[in-house]
Every structure is written in structure tokens, then in C-alpha cells.
Length: 90
Image 1 (cartoon, helix red, strand yellow):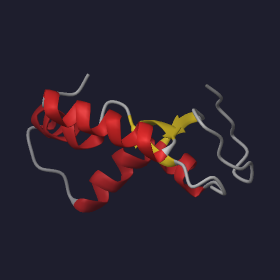
Image 2 (cartoon, rainbow, N blue to C red; image 1 turned 90 degrees about the horizontal axis):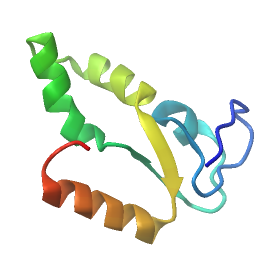
Image 3 (cartoon, one colour; image 1 turned 135 degrees about the vertical axis):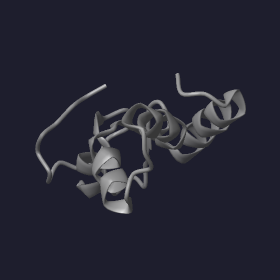
């Protein structure tokens, strides 16, 4: 896994970093950037801890900072499916 702060470096398989930074990099290999754990599974817990629902702007800001990895489409689909079927953020 590689972390690069260079926003112009093309995305490579298994690059890691904040979701927002990875999704802004060039992606010639059409990799899928997924958060780990899945952000959709983390969000309810984050809101529970805050004691309120977040605004869309707050959700976007938190998503941008969420840890993420670049995966080939088939690997990303398997990961997302496994996370959703477990029903919890791991």
C-alpha cells in the first residue's frame, strides 16, 4: 500500500489515503476508491456519538477525510458486499 500526497500522481492499485484526496487524483486504471470501514456503516455511529444527524456538508467533510484504498472494480465489489452483509463497520 502506498500513500502519496502528490495530487497529480496517477492512482495505483492499493494506494491508501483520505477518500477526498484519492478521488481527486488521476485514475487512468479506473480503480474504485472505497473507505475502510465503509463510510455508510460508520456514519450512524458518528452521528450517534455527536448526538445528532449531520448536515450534508458535514457528511461530505467527514467522507473526504475517511481512510480509503484504491481497488480494482471486482475487488472493491467483493469488499463492499462483504462489509454490507456483515452490517457493521470493521
